[in-house]
Each structure stands twice: as structure tokens, then as C-alpha cells.
Image (tube, rainbow, N blue to C red; front, side):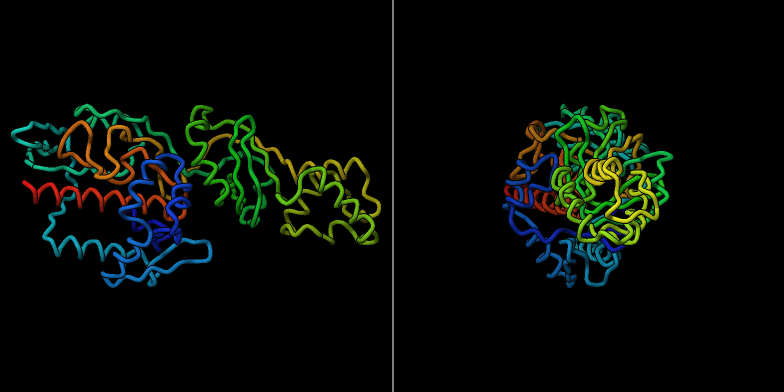
Length: 372
């Protein structure tokens, strides 16, 4: 179900980043842990694994990789085919209430329907849970949980007039959360509830814990023209006053912003509709510079990005062996995917974590079983 909705139904399988040092920079939590794991299974391995099963992955201009068919069903079919090939039994609507482990008997998994499963090895790959209470059955085995908080969300600005520009995208902005060290650049999308786009989603991931503590009420500053600061832009506007002197400011937008956004910012700065560049008063010019380079917004609340719910938090990495994905506390217990305290920014990085940790856990279990 997660694969099905990913990438707008196309499945963003991975990201065309082939340097491990670069790849780990896209994980706000778990980078050092993954650095070891990626030496065993990384982006190239993912591409090769799917290619060997007749699924070709294609990179888009922004680095995201999708199946050449452009449908997530291709990935689902591939994974199910692989499961069928090895006679894997997939049991739907089967929740585990409790798990016990003993040296002699291995694992006992107690199901909600009253039955139990006996196992020599267990790999938990349940995805992230939104609440700490849902990790209780793992805590029972002595594992520490890093409290989960949401990641990858958009910023809400209730009733702000800029939301009337919903649908407008600015290709490169710089956004910082005031009073923190967090800042990101990238495309920004104005929505009917606030702002979204890669710059915002990356920022939400890196600042996930801090924004949770602030209860999603904080201020941001947007620089619509990140190539400039207030001083250099003020100088540039003085140049425009001469070079574009006779032209009306509203009709002549020299900074490359979408026309409707440019008009909105001029209105916010109090610039009269019929004024020419030569006649721009100093007061309005200063306001415009401030709005273009340091436009502050009050953020109140968040919205989950599409249905792609991602959590920061999970099983503490200090208790998991990076080279095998085995628990350091319970022999025979393995973890994979977002259930561990690893999360990536948007763009295929969370799936790459899932493929990498899943592959390593499977290899480790197969190796352990063959030595028994």
C-alpha cells in the first residue's frame, strides 16, 4: 500500500545518487548508521536488483527514479512475484499482540486471533508508527524506542492572503525557521492552506523534532530571490530605476518571479499600480526589498504530505548492528525499514533505506540459518 501511493502512484523507487558520502546527506536521522549499510547495498544495487527481475528504473531531471512503466503496480507485481517464487505466505489482517523469546525455543509470536507462530528468526519491517504506544510489543523485548514524531509535512498559514495564489511554484527560494539553525533552499509551492514543495518538505524533515516541540507554531523567513541579500537587492533596484526608468513596475518584472506573485508583493509593499520605476519612493522600495529577501510568515500547524506519512523516531540505532540489522539485545531478531530510527527527505531516500536494510537483514538471516 505504501508503494502504491508513492510518487503520485508512480513509485519513487530510489534516487540517482551513487556516492555514499552524498547519499547519507539526505537522511536527517541515521546517516552514520546507513553509511555502513550502504557499503553492502546501495542505489546501484537497487537498480541492478530490479533490472534482474525485468524492471527498468529511469531517472528524472531532479534525480528521482521511477519504473519505466510509470506505474507503482510494476513494483508491487515484481515484489509479489518474488515472494511467490519462494513460497512466502503473506497473511493479511494478522496483527501481533506479543512476542516472546527464549534461547531454547526461539520466538513465539502471539496473534490477535488467539493463535501463535513459532520462529527461529524474526525480522520486524512494519514501517513507522505514529505513536510510541504502538511500539510497546517491541519494548517488551527490552528495546529502547526513540519517541516518534511526524516528518515530511507542509506548513500551514491559516487565512494568510498569499494563499490566494495557490498553485504558483517558485523554482528556487531559501527558507529559514527563525530562532533555529534550520534553513533549506529549493522549489516552493503555494497551496490553499499554506506552503509546500521540496524546500519546505526538506525543512520539515531536518527540523522535525524541534517543530514538534514548538507544537507547530513558529515563524519562517522566505527569501524569494536567494541570489540576493537585502543589501545587494537594494543596489540592484537602484540600477532598475535607471535602466527601466519609464516602465511601469507592475508591467516590468525584472527579477523573474511569477507575475501574480510579483504583483502580490508590490501590493504588500504599498507600491501604487501605475508607478514607474523612476518614481519608486524610497519607503516602498525598502519594504519591497524586505519582502523579497526576508518575507516573514507565522506558521500554525502542519499537513501530511499527500498520504506519504513518514516518522522520525523508532527503534534506537544504538541497539542494532549496522552490518547485519540484528538486535544487539535479542539474538535472531532483525529490523528493516522505517521502524528503526532512520528517515530520509523526500525523493526516494526512504525507500532506499527500506531496500538496503531489508536486503542486509535477509542476507544475515540466510547466512545464520545455513550455519546452524
